[in-house]
Length: 437
Image (cartoon, rainbow, N blue to C red; front, side, top):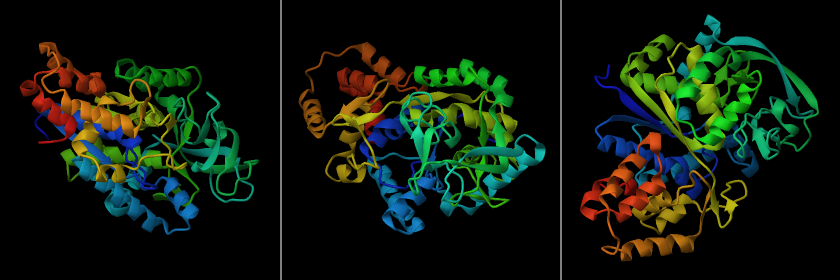
């Protein structure tokens, strides 16, 4: 066991259905790396965890769109993602690639089986809209509609606009994205589900003490105002970790159980059973998760409920660091609409330290921000020309230190303070932002 509590920094695994764009980097990835570096500078033991979201059915949907082999397409984009992280000096202590990790896949399936066997997860019937033509369950990339909360367009997971949980049954006018037909049929499925309402007390205790931004608390308040949903943990579908009965484990259930495995085995490598991994989390002092609003339901509701079901104390879950949209010339970065600056192409012609510093300075939190290439180059040129021209304050360095802690994370404020601080005093913290040294 680790002699000192470890702070775990999570960033959501990117889906290898396309390359990373600058919006991804300006959101969780640079921020989580900066925070991990700053924590280590403060003397903390840190475990940074990321990976690839191999089992999102967006991978298979993209392969169908391009008439490509799904594993080949995944490998291509996985290589681009890893290359961007390497060039940008975004490092992870653990980087999980489920398609290349049979032990991970087997353990996640075993964990779900254990939860079913103990009754912590129940098996029951549930009914949802279905496509009259296409087989399988409408979920994630396979369905689209309007969010019942805010009216924005949404897939079958969570709403990008307000963060609400949006399974097919909750969507207004759901449509099958594989054939374009309205989901006018219905489908009855029997499988493992997690009743969030059974864990209300543990969730509410976590929500009361955790560091959560206002928009996440608004999403949670909507959940609290009514009986909380029953979340399917496996589907009849064609992509993901296989589960008995011809089903596959929901990718978000996989991710939550995957964290139990990935983090637990860092502190107790021989662990096998779920209880062993839960016990290994005694070495975790705090868990901070960096993400966009569309992932907040899973990290603030589903994962904690899964952990409560597994018998894990929620005390280490410290909070979420959430970003808003990063816009490109006034419109949201979008892989599907090809409205993006691809990170691997942009980094090929620009200094990674400048890119990290600018994306920290321009981070879309707590409000959206807007990227233009002209603004990037003008800002970098201004930084290089302002040496010795800024009046410094001893308070700036302390403000920057506090702003790089996950509990007060504000990379934009930290960068501005460090630019105004004495260069000799600020150099160490500035290296955390630029990734140098």
